[in-house]
Amino acid sequence: MAARLTLIVQDFPPGEGTGIGRYCDNLLREFRARGLRFNVRSLSTRDFRVGPIHFGYYQRIAYQRAFVRPSGVVHTMYLLAIPPTTRIATVWDTFYMRGPPSPHIGARWVHEGVKRDLMRRPLLYVAITEAVRKELHRHLNLPFDRIFVAQPGVEIDRFRPKNGPRPAAMPEDGKVNVLHVGLGYERKGVHRLVDALAELGPEKFRLVRVGPARNPTYVRAYQSRASAVGLELVECGFVPNDALPAYYGYADLFVFPSADEGAGIPPLEAMACGTNVVVSDLPAHREMCGDLAFYASSEPGGLAAAIAKALDGRRPADVLRGHAAKFTWSKTAETYLRLYSEVGAA
Image (cartoon, rainbow, N blue to C red):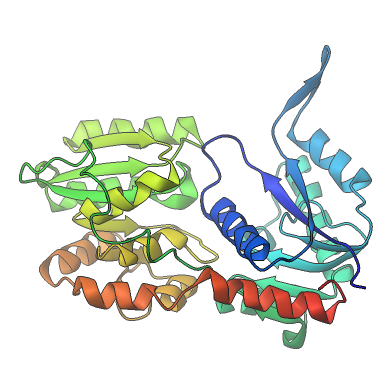
């Protein structure tokens, strides 16, 4: 009989379960459809109180690292908790392994602990792209034969052109509706997008932002910049998954100028909806989008140039959709099921 399997996932605050949350949700749905037996341990990073005592982010993480000890075979998709019985770990990105250590003592403690546990506890690793696989090997010296790749998929039947009514945030009034989907914090590069549209003529564009404000101070800063240059900016906040296809499908262009990404699910979803995409020139984006995206270089004006090129030479919607259809959650699940069999959990 197979050992009991426990999956550790992150319990996101309402409205913040974007890329990682969708990956986990779709994967668990596939597992249930295939009859896989497993337990789910959902862990939160939100602040909490017990009576008058306040426990913050790092206190909660310390508790989880010390006391979360599921029995049986553990697959963690939440790297802040890597119990000793972890046999498989999914790695989303490696930004915390690069660059100088964080000046914040709590962040330093978390990052060093994650790196230490990652190196010594799991038997096998799953990277969400080949780009992350190479980074894991480079920064932790993990052997390639222990690192597997399970790229994210896209629900091609749901993410299709103009699936649903046109969102009110995107009227047909002659302006170019530029869409960004993601959390509002600096790594997503929204400030670069505001500056690029300002360079191209802000009166021509409407920037529609879907996603919660992870960093309100950052969001206020790019909103102020948009107002100063005369760019119309519409903040939609969290949009339920069922409504997302309409935003992608009615956008004139999707732009995703992140400074760092492990994969990037939104560009793939935009392609499935037949919408052209501009992305920052990252290895993960090259891997996911192939030759069909318009890539923005990092120098000043690079994003504006890529946007102008995309508007002048759009890829056919059916070609974009055909590319996105190659990425399925069924393929993602198959990788994990093979590994579960290898560690005696399926």
